[in-house]
Image (cartoon, one colour):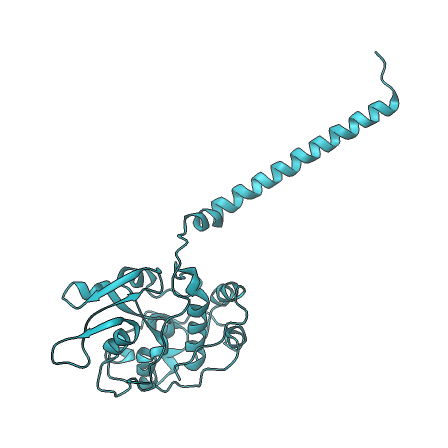
Length: 265
């Protein structure tokens, strides 16, 4: 059997095309495997929790403002982020929670301590302890970090289930500029309602002193607000960000470039 030259060329061309398709498929498969074993497995495993898109900041009906070191810059969070200094972390070995003053002071001088102020701000159906206008005994809320409905009941053990999270953790702030603040300024940072959100206790423990480069809420709906709130706090207290932290914040804000900064006023 003889084969014409034109038929031979066509056969070779089809063979090269087939090998080309196989090569593209192989490269795609390898790329998918690489993605899965680096970031993909975490994205697949991450719950698609839906919840609040923002958390309460300030209620002028009974709260008084805590004056920060600088006003929160107006405009987009991305613009404010570009205004933050980028540096490495300072030493943490000399960190002490007491450097930020006594926990849960009555910083705004409204007659109630900060923890109860935040519980009252964030919970619905609030019930106070008998004979008190400050001490919150119970309530419920749509927890912002998990996106779940939670109840708060005051008690030796049950109170731990709901904690007050520092949006910018104090240990993180200590390593990124807070050492240069005065004691009074650090006390305001620790008690500023802009920097405080009621949250699930175990989740708050999991977050620890993490910044946006190493921890973000599982409820993706609140991430833009959360990152914008961190940026607003850092801008108003003269704190800086690391390069990795800034990149993580930019990635979050890339899905919401018009997200504005957040103020307690």
